[in-house]
Image: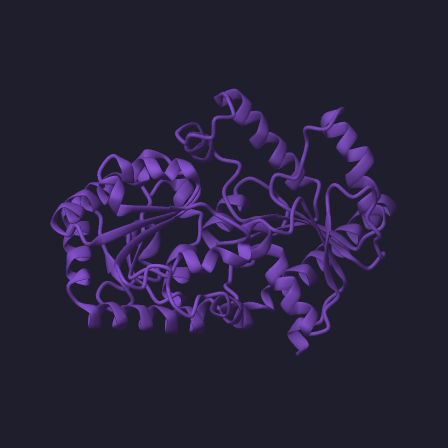
Length: 372
């Protein structure tokens, strides 16, 4: 495939097992290698990284700047040596990690790391500094890319998140863990309480009306709290995130809930959870703020904003198995046709090629200015 022709690429990641690494590096790089693109990753903890002068080097989000010596040491010991032995440096961001909205999100989320607003602003400044040491930036959504373009003069390319549908289906259980019960699920990491307000209230109402329903909360342990306040403990099943290979099975519920507050931070994300639920066979109920781009109400899912709307949508779906199947099948088709990794794979090498060309142009301009 001509679109998949590009230089060698090396991504520097902290772990190959995290969901972040899977979505942004491991899954697309594995598929690219099947098309003979020399894409590989290396752990940041490794003492040295073997580079070819033609390689593009990708720095992940939160590229570490807390080493002794800070920015100066990072520039001298890491950035400049890599720049000297590579074709281009690319900073990859899958979330907004720079704005005041991100700081607010972090402080309202129970991370338990003790960071203050000033600590977070320094972290954001360091992230932006790291971005500006690179030749280009890749962003996981167009909304995030648009925001980054207001902050940096570096070229920003949108490389949307895409789901490896074939792999995802291969990791689903032949029979759901809760096949004998009706299930409503939520999955994710740590979130502020405002993300759950209307949905959690509706869960409580549904639990009282339908004591036969099990509520499956998959993800960070702190997410249990929103369910515990509204749903009897004997109706809640909590699944902690395990290895990335086991995550799809946690999404095999009858109804998957995707709820966000709709802050500027939220709107820079991609609606991954709706895709996962759809491919896993669940009907999706979601907040319109982020998810309306893929959840067409009554066709690929149901949209709900208030507690009354959430309750009505959930009760309708619990009582209508045919509607659940119809919505899940339509969502799965939409994901296959718009967001599958196979269809979007060329976005990665296209951006890397553009980064190399941008560095080449910039170098020529510097040489011309120097000789003028």
